[in-house]
Length: 298
Image (cartoon, rainbow, N blue to C red; front, top):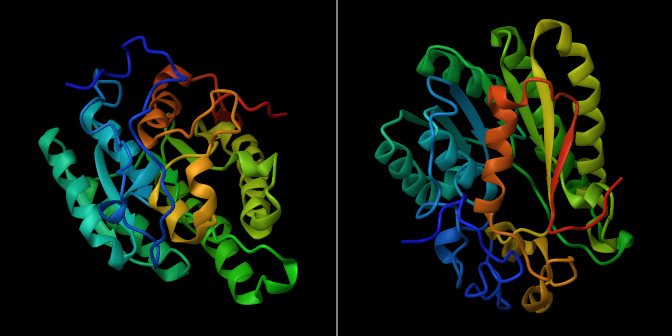
């Protein structure tokens, strides 16, 4: 049995058996097609009732960070609505089974978050299907590596902003009227907001926008008892990296530049989201929690 998140380990040696070899896949990317599957905590995350009775909506929940958060939330006692693209159904089905195995309710709402009508319908479905909503995790993201500004198309720039920023705006706007005091919103930013890679101009810009939006919204919603925070991952091994997020030839060295010398796994992000979703973080709002292998940030 894999060590759980409470077991003391050498963080420089964790996941040394996962080899991020050069590979690529089309579309949004599927974990089921990775040569080395990411760890979502399916064999290790141990819940302790920290989110008992809570009702959560997670975008990008089929794989990667969103999937790990969905598993952790369920094992902590929350029911979960999962948003993902229809072509990611294969991965999503597996996460649904993980949630059901934890004894919690799982609702799937496949669709494209670049569509504002879908985002509003997603929130409505979550409220109706779960009988309310008190945790919103905006995690879906588009990341495509483009080496030169001249080759960055307006279409990609627009779609990256719609996926990463507009969807967050649409979902938050639709969700806030349903949120009660004690509810939380958690948005996913990135180390790219602080240390932008030359080939990820559009992606890095959206992640900086997420930080600013979240800090402003946190101040706006604080008097209503609703907290807004951000998790900013470093290099994390997910299908997104193999589906155009990074040049395939650079994947063998992916994450080695961090102080811990390796990429992170989705399972290592889940506890940060659980903390920010739970009452343990009751005096934390407008904060960005960096989970990046030790890379210095502002």
